[in-house]
Length: 462
Image 1 (tube, helix red, strand yellow):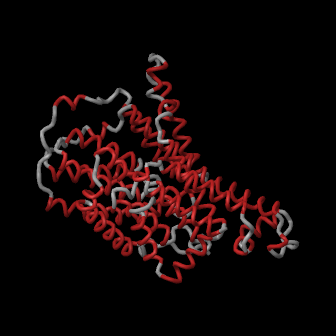
Image 2 (cartoon, one colour; image 1 turned 60 degrees about the vertical axis):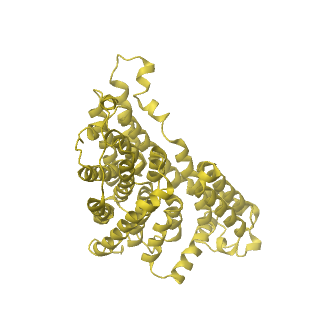
Image 3 (tube, rainbow, N blue to C red; image 1 turned 45 degrees about the horizontal axis):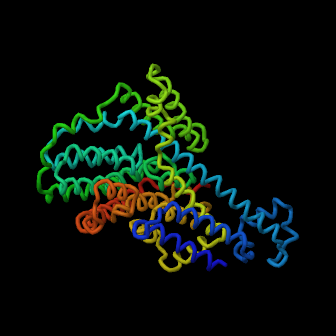
């Protein structure tokens, strides 16, 4: 049965990676994969690996059966299925924290965007020099992604360059750099990229340490492609159509909602540090504050007009399929973890390759082909935190590699897929023009991390 579960997981993974060719939304593939893996798990006979696992022994102790059950043949279907159900509930506890966090963050960002809050930043960019504009757009994307997320940042910045760069060929280069910048910027903060958020919520990294340790590697990841393009970029931005500059003017509430929204996002790590409550609690608190403010402003507007500018309206516009995708794929990975398959994979990798830095580097490059969420989820299940404690090198390096490795191919990250859809970027064009730059940046950041990691190394707890 283990083999059958692995086969279904691989098939589901392949369907997710080939979402566009097979024309099946990856959310549907992820949900089916997660449900099928757990269904096969509960219907399969117990294996020695499961029976000898710490989680199963803990479950037996809870039932006060640790002395009475010694062999697989003595385990009843009721005990085994109770264990599987308990495992599913425990995993859903951690998964739901990630989902509520993401939903809160997505709603806050959507609410700020509905008030045209991001135009407070983008309207201040006016240069017509391509190379100067490239640096400005790249670093704005980098820092904006660190407090929003790489997907939202990509959408906001591509909307900007559409107004500033009429020339299609030049705009594609800028879009490629935005993808690299957004992914690099999202990697060094706990709220900038979903994979870093997963590691933060899971307790593998702390907010302060990940910011200090990964900032310079992330800067190097963007700086190398920028320096190269500063010498090789040719062409002009094109002539701006004056009629397009009047669209999307700022509202009277734009600044207020921008500062409240960014403040709410930045407040989350502080809230967790002070209260030690899960991060999603702080995120929901921030959302609640913005919700109240959105309801109170413009009291004279009618209900229909006001709804577009309230949290209720923002909730109707968030990307729910992405949330369900995370649910499905995290369920599938947690099934493999409960069956001890990920533990065996980690053991095999250690015996075959040995050096964890090489393993994590390869995982990051693999994220350019397959989604980085299940890769990070699998890695979190592969390594025991009793050995690889919080802020251990492998967790920090995994946050960098999984966050930035997806830039190597256009399909390797949410930011890349968004840019691909918005600007109709061809896969082959990106591979020829941007992939090598992204790979050089990825390698440069990895080298910088190896240099700075010993400086900020965290010692194991006593």
